[in-house]
Image 1 (cartoon, one colour):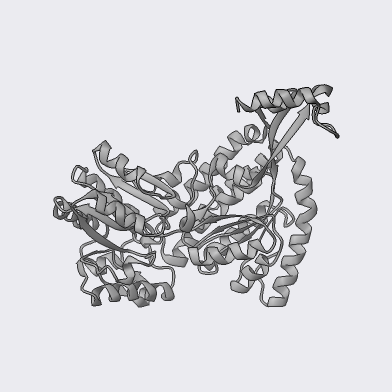
Image 2 (image 1 turned 45 degrees about the vertical axis):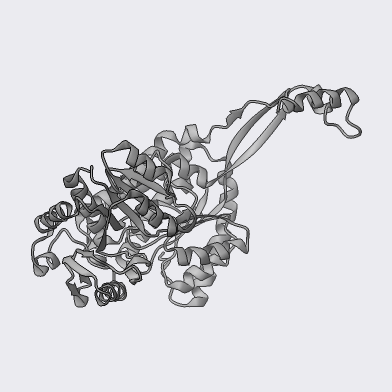
Length: 479
């Protein structure tokens, strides 16, 4: 049965019924075994792999996403996340022993990872399968139920995910609801135990406010303006190859794509020459060749195309110089890969998250000026440093804040399932992936067991024995 809803009343009734049905299941799952959770994760992974042809078709129908990008940015991360959970969830579930302190001698302590309960996953449109099923795998591994709200901006991919979820799970375990903003609002009215949201900082604030009404815990995977820094010692060919891929994959619609590049003035011309050559070789030398390239995704819809074009027009009006690209076809929702120089400091392009194929280039002479500019802005989701000088690398990493960072690479920290992925402040709250994702969807419960009766009597009702007070005073000197 489809969860596509056609009226607000039907939506709310179906959502409430599903939420209620998951209550008993979430209680049962508290004692679910590792094997039970593994079976569910394996079933989802196998369903994804068995339906890749229809996934390619859905991704192309929504925004002409190339199959190669679907492989590396949708299928591969989901399968890697699933395999990591399958291989390690039994270990993750085991209580962690904690040694007693001086004040708790005679007790045995441990940390038990308990499921949070009923979880809500609100996912975005730019990498919908990856950013829906990745958190879902973590939620299942931790023993939770889940309700998913995918983006309405990619209807074919949302419909594909709906089929996968309905084929793999009963609605009291995992349910998915397609729909517009009213569906999201109805879901956020419910007292979920945990909310995992991926999207913009502006909507993230609304999600956090809704969660606060029920004191629900939240994970916010947001965005921001992620900088790249290229110093004079960098491998320029590597920096060009890597940044052109990181920026223009998925037409720049990537939350950790570089939003602007600081490049040392002494190597700027050479680096830009490499960038132009790479773009021409990969996508074509003319606007028409690029528009028809099978390797370039398009913008997700007309509204976002108009938004990105407005950023480009504003930058041009303020004196920006287009180094390459600059072409726009609103009818095709296509914007050519564009490099810009001399972008005014007050241009919208320098303050708003671009989420499109526009890349401002900023020259610098002193790395301290770059650090100051990065620190003057909200903390980004990612930071990329291209250098062969350890002193420079360490100086930038130690004196800036970002959710994650790569040195002489970009984006790959997201693919490293044994690292925490998340933002800081404006770019997010909490972590995802692997064991970190498991802990995100778990409550770490402290449990203390008394092993000897004397230990329990030390803190019994009434006045603390005089000898114990003397011992405690001595202990305080060592604490």
